[in-house]
Image (tube, rainbow, N blue to C red; front, side):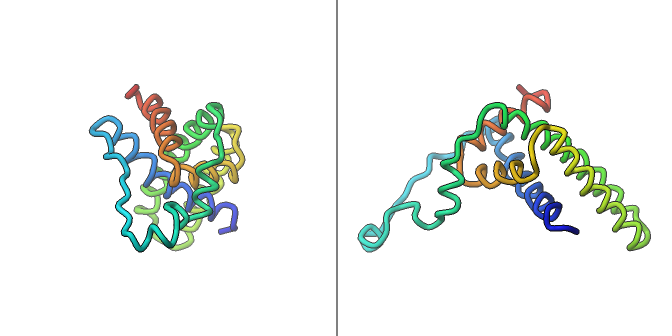
Length: 151
């Protein structure tokens, strides 16, 4: 597996973990507001949110509505490819057959992302931003709900 597809594959699992629950959480019950309860010692040492500078910079990157639309299109297509690959892997009888299924799925996922108008790197960046930015996560979740007939 090459680095590009490995990153995409990792990002897709991360997107599944972040986007799907966020979509359902919006329907079922809102998340409680984030609250910080710093101890007096921690207030003197570091300001809040300094723990993850990479996440903070990803969270501050604005993402256009068009990119959110493209991401949602790519995500839905990729999710379908992943589901088919998972089923095919369960029926694969030989390691070579399983490798073939994985290779085809990787190729199809990259093609699906690129067909949406995004580059794989852009797709991965949106996934990273979603993990750090609730607004982006909610925007993506809303688009995914629209595509699943829920909105």
